[in-house]
Image (cartoon, rainbow, N blue to C red; front, side, top):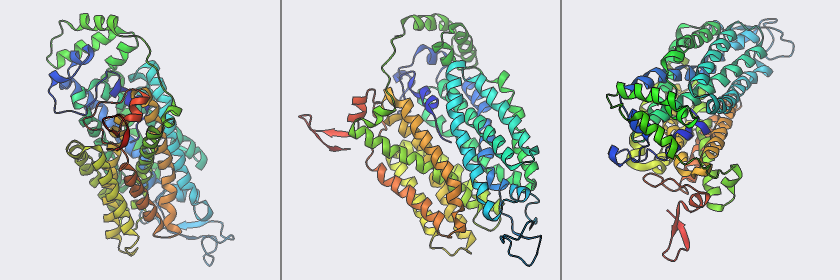
Length: 516
C-alpha cells in the first residue's frame, strides 16, 4: 500500500492537484495533454478496470505469510516423553487437522527456529521497498508499461517457483524476488493511473485504487480455506499473474510519459485513441500538443535533496511528524492484520472479518477527507486504531470473538489512515522536495512493515505486548498530527521557503506567532 517518489510525480507534473474536486472543469488549469483525453471518460474507466486487478496479487503475496506460516500444534516425535523444545528432541509430529502443510511443518520452524517465519516476512517487505526504488527508476527511463509487464512476469515465475523449492532459504530468496516484482507492479500501476486521470478525480481514484487490495485480502482467506497445503496455496496466489501478462497488449503507455520523454508522435496516437473513446474532438490534438512541446519551459527547476527536508525548523518538524505517521501505517496495518491471524479461533473467519471491514474503511476515507480534511481524518483514524488495540490488553485472551472484533476495528482505522497519508504528504511537502519527501516517508513505512511480523509474534512472550505496541504507536502518531497544518484547499508549497512558512500564522508585521 506504500507510495514512492514516482507515484507522486503524477500529481505534480502538470502543476495541478486534486484538492478541490468540486470545481467545474473550466476552473482547472489543464494542459493540452489532459484536455485531449479529458479528465474522466470511458477510456479512463476501461484502463482502470484492466489495471486495478493487479492489486489482488499484491495483497495475496504481502498477506500470504498469515497462512503460509500459520501456527501448527506439535509434539516431539523422536521421543514422546520429551518436551517438544527439548534439546534431545530431533523430530516433530504436527497437528494437521487445520492445515495439511505449512512452511513450519515443511522445514521444522519450531522452538528456536520459530522466528525464522517472521524473518522471512521481514525480508519480503524489504523486497517491496527495493522493488519500488528499482522499478520506479526503470519506469522513469523506459515508461510505465514495459516495467509493469516485466514485473508481472517476474512475479509469476518466482511465485510459482517458490512452490517447488526444497530449501527454506531458497524459499526466502524466491519470496524476496517476488516482493521486488510486487513492489514494481505497485509503483508502475499507480503512477500510470494518476497520470491519465484528470486532477478533478485524482483524489477519488487514489483511494479507489486501494479497493482491489482490500478485496484481495478478503479472498485470501478463501484461497487458504480450500487450499490447506502451502504448496497449493502458493501456486494458487501466484498463477493468477498469467492473466496479467495481457497488459502488454491491453494497457496503453502513459501519454504524459511519452510527451515528457520527447516521443510526441506516440503521445498523439494514444491521446487521439483516448479522445475517440471518450467522444471528444481529435481535430486539434496534434497541433496543440506540438505547440505545447515548443512553448513548454524546458528550464530545469531547482531540485532539493533529502537534507533540505531537515534544514529549516518548521519543515523539519513537519517531515518528522509525517514520516512517523507513515511508520505507523506500515507497522500497524500489516502488524494488526497478522495479529488477527494469531488471535486463536478460526483463522479463516478471523482474517475474512478483518479484511471485510477494510473495504468500508477505505470508502469512509473518501468522505472523511472531503468533509473534514486530512488532519482530522488522520487524527481520528489513528485514535480509533490506538484505543481499540489498547483495549485488547484488558480483554481475557480466551474471549477470542472480542479480541478479533477489536483488532478488526483497529484495522479499519488503518485502512483510513493509509490512503490519507498518501495525499496528505503529497500536499505538505514543497514541490522541489516532494518526490524525495514521499520517497523518504515511503521507506520509513516499509521499515514499519518489516518490524510488524516480530511485534505480532510477541504474543508468545506476553499476551498483552502486541496490542499495546500496536495501540500506543498510532496514538503517538495522532498526537504528532496536531502539529501539522491542514492542507485541504491550500495551494501547494513550491519552494523550501514556502514549505517552511506553510502552517505558520503571521501577524500583519510579518512576525511569526504560531501555527494553524
